[in-house]
Image (cartoon, rainbow, N blue to C red; front, side, top):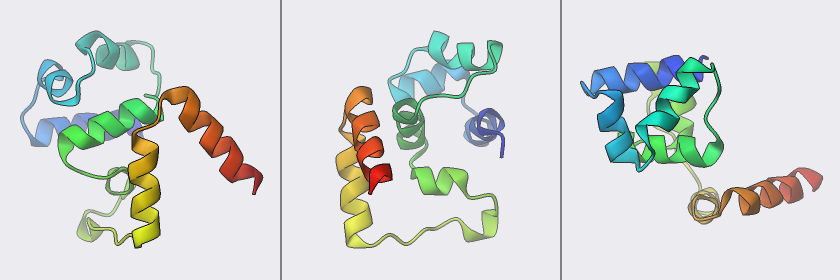
Length: 102
């Protein structure tokens, strides 16, 4: 899956410009456009903001089959995602490092 193409697809489905996506996500338009100019992937915190703007979860973002556009999360998974969403980038990195070490 191409993350940048997926963002474009979701943005175009809503008939949003990059500027409108920036407005809805709280990111700057220059940040979003730089991903495309430099062919860079957004960070997880930025991608989370993008998903929030689209009203979808990260899991839904990465689903490739449109027929299965819902994901069931356990109470524990939802709690972990909600907590992780509030972390600063460095805190998130520390959390993932810790989880990966288990």
